[in-house]
Length: 85
Image (cartoon, rainbow, N blue to C red; front, side, top):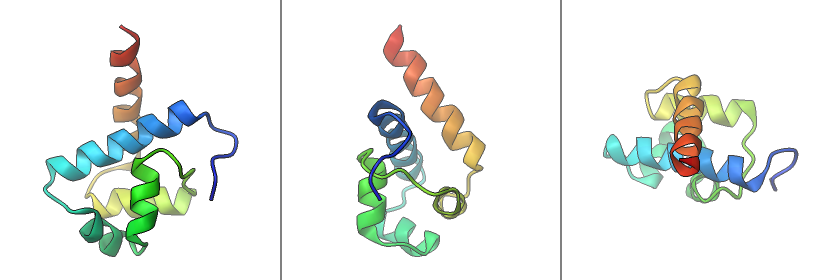
């Protein structure tokens, strides 16, 4: 699903937040895909900022990371803040 309604920058920050959280937890992209009930390609596209995730996918990815969706969004906002300083 291509990005629609959200800037590439916002999606890129969300992707970086997902990747950072996944790596901190020592989870491979394949393991996250399995836990979230999606494909490795979807995880790759999400982390690359090329996928505008549905709410359901965001919930599934957060669950796979054992994180709250709001924590991923907050981390994405922190990434934004650190880039602007």
